[in-house]
Image (cartoon, rainbow, N blue to C red; front, side, top):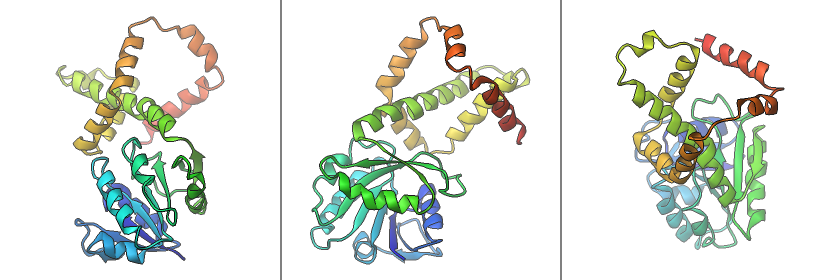
Length: 261
């Protein structure tokens, strides 16, 4: 049994704490955590000394500062495994290169939200530090211990893909929800497509306004590229041909999701 230290106790921090506590001892460092079932630490220094594995579950803005502090602490105590779970990796990879070699570091992106019931079958993208690829091995093994689906990618590819798979969908959902608010009584006319897209957009709003703004700002170049692409005619016949095998199953899943409520 390892000691798992989590810095941050927001929605994802709580999910990680709950999941890891099934097999490991969990400790939390957060100003917002009070009277929790896990061991609570008043400072990062105390948690760092205690934990074997340290997970940074802070906001995009806060994560680099936390990693800078952990890099300093790592000069005094080696043998730790450290990773963050931030959505974009541009601002953290250079910091990881400053950690001493006696500490294993990498970055991780859970491709799901805090509503997940467990890690089983859920996808995690593990991003190794260039030149320290072996550091990621303990983290990959650790996640697979929980039956997670682990995929390894480099930081540049990861960030570009996140703009596409998160940034653009967020933009579409938020923009649509904002646009239709100008049409009084529009919900009386909405059908299945309307319901599906507005449900998604409202689910996005479960994230903090700060996080949503960060995602949209970071993805700005791909959103602009998407808007330019959208001006052109779409070859619908070609799309149907390309996705022929999935169309019927997708349509069934579409209605299944809508009918679950």
